[in-house]
Length: 292
Image (cartoon, rainbow, N blue to C red; front, side, top):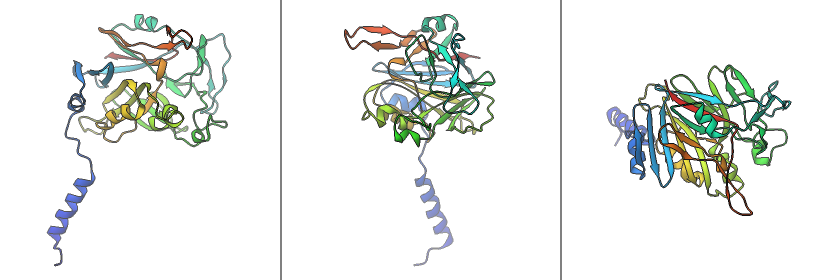
């Protein structure tokens, strides 16, 4: 029997509805259903914990994010890998306690990948802050002339752009004319722990964004901080981020997360393969998140 217009329209509507995922649940409800317990819940910060791992949301309408680093002026900058006419200087590794002492009432995380454990090091990917690209990045895990692996010569880097009230993650484009804080890094799907190490278990710091109030701007910055394999860690964010990109910040021994009242929740640590003694390490780049 021929389908009339009303029946066809109804069928088309049902098809389109079923085609799109439904996001009626808030991200905080989803985190709770994943077995996480609320540690802090305010308009500005939503912090959850499970088995030493953390999921945290920062409302950028209430919070400000800034970049914390210090260039080593004693070393000459070198040619970078990802931006023309932008060099790759060395940055001092800074004790995390010094960063805490200089940023009272702040949430602090490590951020950029870096290239060595010497007293100063180049950063891995481009960063834009204070109206300048402060580094072109020196990583070989990206589309450079001599990548670490053929796979990395073909990947697309991502750019996390954090503005005064919202954030977004997009494909990194060199010709961008930025105005906000920008961090460039890998899509979690391109992380070496997944591509080169069979999805090994380590600590990760993953970031995505979310438009919770559906006003067209992603006002929430969501972070996954903790131990696991990267696919499992990312899957928790994928349940709530409405198909946004998920970008990886520096993980493993570098993972650091400090709370303004609860103290250090994740500390950077490197394990000595000889005697397995935990050694604290200092880091060259942090993000500082404070209430406006």
